[in-house]
Image (cartoon, rainbow, N blue to C red):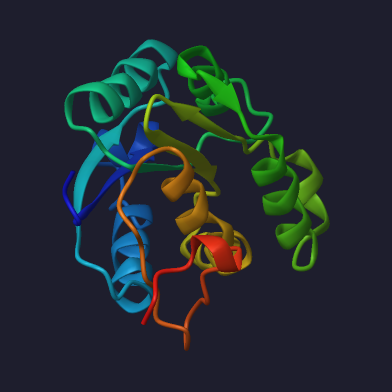
Length: 182
C-alpha cells in the first residue's frame, strides 16, 4: 500500500465542460488540499458535463482503475433537472454514509437557507470514499472545513493511507486507538 493519498477531483458542469466559462471548482479543491494536508497527496482531475452515465463511468474509473482513496465531486447536487450527481453517485455506491450528506447540509445552512435544496451524499465504492460537494468555491471551502475532520479516519477504515492534516486548517479526528504514535 502506498502512503500517498490519491484524490479524484471531478467538477460537473455542462457550461464549464463546454468552455462557456472557466471552472472554479477544481482550483478551489486543489487550493484547499494544498493548505490542509501535511501527508503526501496527488490528484487526478476531471471536468465533465451533467450526464449521469458519464458521471457514473468517471466515478468507477477513479475508484476501480485509478485507485483513488478519496473522490470529490463538485456541482450537480441541486434540484434542477440536469443535476444528477447524487443519482450517479448512489448508482455506483457499495455503502451509503448518510452522515456526510446530513453534515454538509447542516454546515451550508449556517450560511444560506437554500442549503435544504442540496442533495449531497457520501458513499464508499470499494476502498474509495466518494463525497458530493457544492459547486461554488466559497461553499466548497465551508463544506470541507465542516466535514473533513472525519475523512481521514474513514479512509483508514476502508484501507487507505494514514492522512495527516495541518491543524491550523483542519484537525483530523480519530479515536485514540487509531492514532499513530508520534
